[in-house]
Length: 99
Image (cartoon, rainbow, N blue to C red):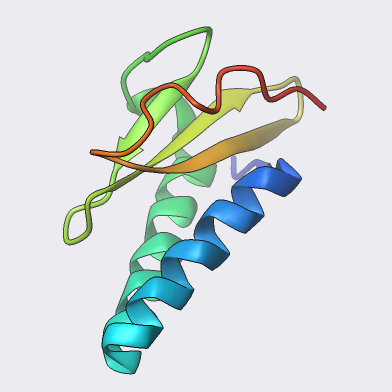
């Protein structure tokens, strides 16, 4: 069963910021970043419990080609993405994100 994926508004900003950074360096790379994000979200939506437990009741999906993780938590009928976090910047900055 595929679950609905929702985004914390700050997670949307995380992804937008990353895409803009890649776009400034190489527009093709920005598109590839978004394609990898879309693939990752499709995997998460289909099998959300397949990815390892992380911190504070979350799970983490590591992107393959880019130094980013998708941090999410399972809700009753949905998956909530809390952050699109860079692997080397501001660890745990997303921990206080609540709806």
